[in-house]
Amino acid sequence: MAETTDVKLYFSFRSPYCYLLSKTMWDIVDNDRVNLLWKPVGGWDLRSPPDRAKVKIPLVRQDLARYARRMDIPVNPPPPETEPTPAGAASLYAEEQGKLRQFIIEAMHLEWGEGQNIAEDTALAEVANRIGLDSGAVIGAAHDNHYLDELAQNASEAEECGVIGVPTFVIGEDIFWGQDRVDFVLEHLQEIAS
Image 1 (cartoon, helix red, strand yellow):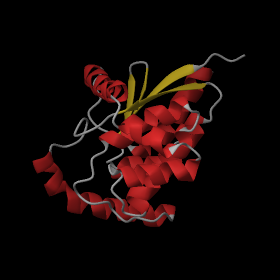
Image 2 (cartoon, one colour):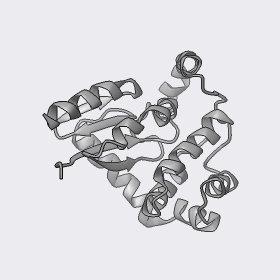
Image 3 (cartoon, rainbow, N blue to C red):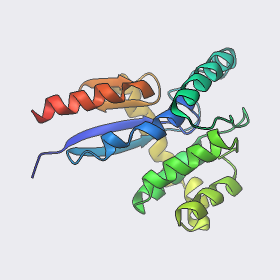
């Protein structure tokens, strides 16, 4: 059996670039030589601070719209106050249940494709229903200190290894920042394999 490579993925459910990545990351995840280490973060971790984010929103929305047209995916940004922490925590539960891929796809679509605030329990219940998880368990996980602590640990770990934003893949000492780095990650994995 081929040796596997640990690939860390730092991800925020509030990032429009993570939305784009949620459509393109699966060639990495499906590689039988990859062991994905899921590292969601919450709050403002690994994102521009609020004052800077306000200035960036018009540019980011233009950029997102360009990518969305090219990828033929819907874009309907969520309310500005949307908080990524509950979805990040719930994603850790979904991973334990073997439903991480489905959770990522549906949560990001609900937020960025349908414009819903995924911090709200009703939105998380909708994600749970779409992917066949118990909505009460998903909502409970979104507020569970065990999962919330893991989000904070992920953010601290990211800063220690030099991660400056999301989405970011980390393979050993190599850091690949941005949703448009998937090809570089795949090339790097091929180099490791050979």
